[in-house]
Amino acid sequence: MQDLIGKDYPHYSNNESNDNSDFFYIEYEGTWYIEQETYEWISADLNKLESFISKRLEKIDLLRKKHSENSQFNQQKLESKNLPIYNTHEEIAQAMGISVKGLRFLAFSRTHYHYNRFQIPKKPSGYRQISAPKKLLKKAQNWILHNILEQIELHDAAHGFCLQRSIVTNAQIHVGKKVIINIDLKDFFPSISYKRVKGLLKSFGYSETASTIFALICTEPKIKEVEINGKTNNILLSWTDRYLPQGAPSSPAITNILCRRLDRRLTFMAKEYGFDYTRYADDLTFSAAGESLVNINNILKLTNLIVKKEDFEINENKTRVVRNYRRQEVTGIIVNEKLNISRDKIKTFRAVLYKIEKDGLQNYTWGKSQDIIAAIEGFANFVVMVNPEKGDKFIEQIKRIKEKYLRKREKYVLVHQEFMTQSHIVKQINYKLKELKFNKTKKRQHLQENYHKLSLQQLTEEELLEFLHYLTNWQPEKFCFSNTDDPVPF
Image 1 (cartoon, rainbow, N blue to C red):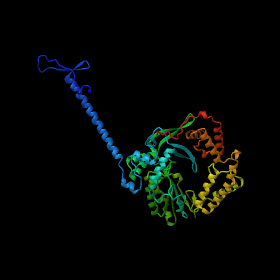
Image 2 (tube, one colour):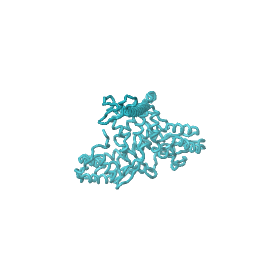
Image 3 (cartoon, rainbow, N blue to C red):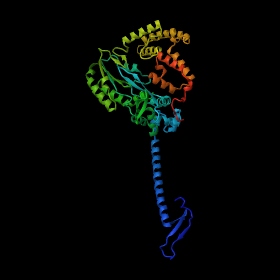
Image 4 (cartoon, one colour):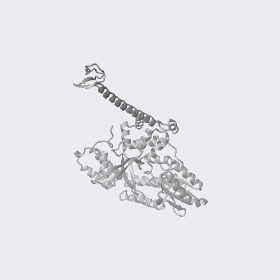
């Protein structure tokens, strides 16, 4: 058709009698065609082309309209909440300090899983699934946390993962009450879907585009761990069925914001019946004294109703109603008469510190941590928060322990391996890893396959020494790994 349009080709007519029944012919590439039929073909092709172009233009117009709608944002809302105004891929990527390709890789890649998954024990039994974001994703989540989520005002009843609030402020409200009601929300983080997170961000005033990117970065897809040839593999079950990961820095702040209406409704209901209410993450606590105790059943029934209305579920096995003649605990702190820690635990901790100071750091543990110094310092700081007088004494004793044993170990660390501290072993391992060009991906793979752990800090001293021995006898020429933690296309 394009060859025929606008060009002059040989013509001839078969009319020898000059009547009106003649046909005109056109010669094209050695073949003669009836001129009228040729024009009809051209006309039909032109109509098809016109229809095709018209549909394409309609589609382009729809895409432009959709893009325009997706980029619309509420500037007044964003400014009223003191939130940054970024509503395109380019603006968001530049604000986060990553490339546009990197941003799209984090938000839209369906071939790469951006989390390290592992389990930790939880009380009283079972395990809690943790999804720790990899380096680049964690950077993006932290940006969202500090620049957006932390700018949103929370309800006064929320005490978990809030600035200037803690388990101590959460427990303080319930000190000296006649009854304490503890209620736990079931599968708290996984119950919050991508759709809810995206809707929350849109309610701030962000565009469809920005809300989608932020929500995808802050959620993880549903996967299943399958063992193939002795190795654990993550199988993607659904890309669109996403939820909040427990282990991401942005997740607790998102839950606190989403629970503002829940906190508001429960606070109002509690006050109506003479109760106080607080929430620390997924732990709901009610307390009361005097005549209000007759309303315990109403509190339990209405809490269950409100929680369901807010798309959460109560873990019935963890609901507790505790009177003041028994030990009352709120987020691990005793609240019967004043804030306190279990006498038995304090007594045991004091005995451990005495033995460590007397005999040394070897052969002693506290809690589940393999780093004894970090473990005892952590608990001592917790005691300081609850009972500063007792805690300060423990802090002083730990200082004496560190001065007495850690310095002494430093002198002999290179000579007597049996006196090496965990931190010194880790330093030697890291030095060896660097020498062998042993990258982070290979290190995590080895730790997970051989010890079912993801970091050196989780290994025992025996396991650390075993890993150091393994590296010492490794053949460097076997390495052929990339230097990046994530295969980011930029």
